Structures are given as structure tokens and as C-alpha cells.
Amino acid sequence: MIPILLDVPLQLKTERLILRAPYQTGDGHIVNEAIRDSIHELRAWLPFAQELPSVEETEINLRNAHINFLKRDSFRYLIFHKDSNDFIGTTSLQSIEWKIPKCEIGYWINTRFSGNGYMTEAVKELTNLGLNYIKFKRIEIRCESTNFKSRSIPENLGFVLEGTLRNDDLSADGSKLTDTCFYSKIK
Image (cartoon, rainbow, N blue to C red; front, side):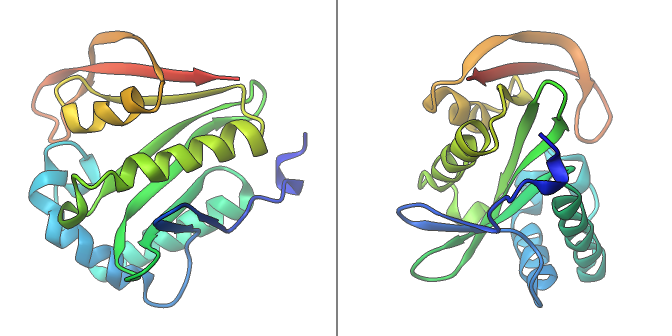
């Protein structure tokens, strides 16, 4: 397989959601607003949320995500509600190793939409894309052991907990060592 020749869909649909690749005009503003609305929850788990990014920084990040999508280095999708068009969060196929081939799924949600099963629905669709369309042989989800909301997503989707890596990473704020739960699904 030659990754650059792979036709990866720019949009995916589920029962309630549309997942689309960045970039469209205005994406930086809506994503930044969601980060702003959710900063207290995101700060506990994500290094990028330690400081509130400017709209311009978010725009740059999304444009770089678009470039990485085109280069087949990662596939980030913005998640929108089908009916209301509200921005819900992001999910990505990232840390791709084409020689295996395998990847990792990352995600975050706008706090306003947490608890409705949207992220589980989005990650399920992305897992399907990865395993059945792109033909990855392994998909991993890693999350901090104390992030029970994040852990519930791979657990609800039938990913296997392969183990907990002790003192594996630093907390999002860099202040302490944390344990990482390591989930996978294979084809």
C-alpha cells in the first residue's frame, strides 16, 4: 500500500453525527470556542489545554491537521451534530505506522455534549474506517488510568485492555508521573 494514494473519505456519517476533515473557513473559531467552553475539563487530561490557545493558534493547528491528512500522516475529523450542526469535538487516527500498519485513536469532546454517547459513536465510526477501509491491523487507544470517562469509550467498543503502563507518562500539566491504560483492537 502506498499511503499517499489511499483515498480516505473527507466526511463520515453516523446515526447522529457528521465527522469531517478540517479545513473549512471558520473552523478555527468554532473549535477554539469549544476549547474555551471546556478548558477546565480538558486541562486535567490534555497538554495542549494547559494554556487557552488563541483563535489564530487553533486555526494554525487545524491547517496543520489538514496538511497531515493530505500527507496521510494522521486523519483528524471534526465532529458535528447532524441536525443542529453544533460542533461536538474531534477524533483522529494518529501515530500511524504504515509498515505494520497500525495507529492510535485520540479524541476530546466539548463539555456541553459530554454524557450523550456522541464520542463513543464517533470513535466507533473511526475504528470502522481504520480497520475495514484503511485496513489497519491494529488500533490502539491510550488514556490516563484515572480518566474513567475516556476509558469507558474503548471499553464500550470492545477494545481489549492489554495492560496498564505504570509511571509511563507525565500528567497533562507535567507535575507528576501517571499510569497509562493501553487498549487495542486488531483485525
